[in-house]
Image (cartoon, rainbow, N blue to C red):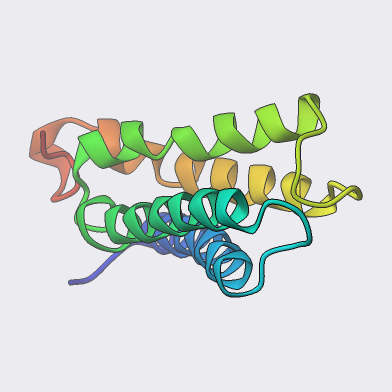
Length: 127
């Protein structure tokens, strides 16, 4: 598969956001903070699932130019913007949230023309 530079930027950026979410979920599942360990583990397992599914969408249908995947992955910037605006955990510095907002927006906006061009113009204009 010969991908354009914007498509490479897109899927790699979104895969990086997914990997960050997945790793965070795994770490908290294995070593939850003090407090209600079962609740933290349950939330962390759901977080790991979000990272895993987002990563699978970024690596396979998004990279293949499936338009539905582009729409589905808009969850990432919305999710991270909500965390930033409402000062939600994890962490208190919120730098990672800004980084994930920027990465997810770059990942979605860089290849936007690939998802919305005329079908006669190229391979990434499916569905």
